[in-house]
Length: 353
Image (cartoon, rainbow, N blue to C red; front, side):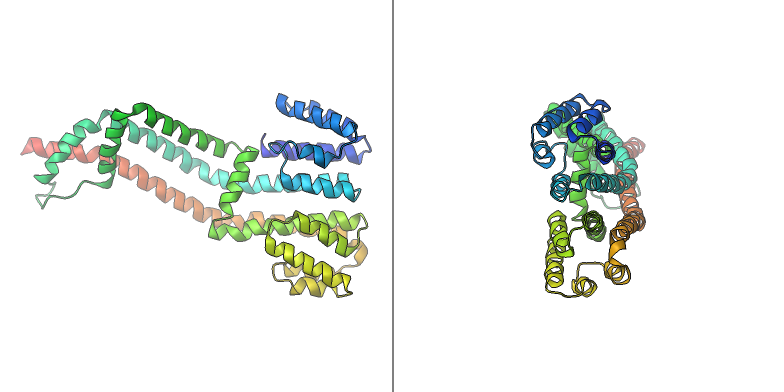
């Protein structure tokens, strides 16, 4: 399943549930529009189990391949607070946001990945069909150089090609298998499937320049959760504790629990948020200057703002990433071309002298 398909599923289900259609019937109707036969079968099973009295979150938890653990957790919170349709709308918005974020990264890396795969094919082809002759010519490096200087070491590309040549002739099936795996993962990475997006998010969390943007997604999630739960009439401490369960960052979880305890003791909510380090000060300002009855709408607007800020903030980082990948691609292609031309030039040198 693609990330966009999952987001579309939540959006359609939210609309039907919000229209007061029974949940089992809503699941059945949504399942009819998806072309993936396996997903239709999953939704049929989910519909039957929910109709038998099981909770939607408990049933979805049995299908982790399709439904993210965070989304299942949010659905469970929505069911317990009797705001399932609103929570489904929030999940759909978050799924769309995450897909857009990951897609931007994938778009930047598509061209370098395709070029690197093409360069690898050329490199392996040269190593298998040309390098046996190149290796013989390369022995002349001890006697000749292009400019009559002292013998120079073999270029890195040629040395690698000579070594790979031996491997391709010794175990060609293994080389093909390794390249097949590389090509498969390249296509999987660019496919936009839910699993590839999750893998990319885990990678981005470990990239120094991207950590802030990835952690900012917790802020989006927090604002969405507070918007739904406060709109359902939950008390602030209860809403904060439920949102705490949805967070990925441990520091944000701790901060939310501290704010919940402070509010429960009668402390000022805005002051508690401002004193909690990981929480954005804009949240405190919103709480401080908004009437309690408008806070759900204000938190929803905040989530939209943070989504825009995260997507916009990726621009400079993705340009940097694109530049690094472009440099790597150019270097790889240069080494392949150098490895191809160097033996020919030395062969011409040998014929001339």
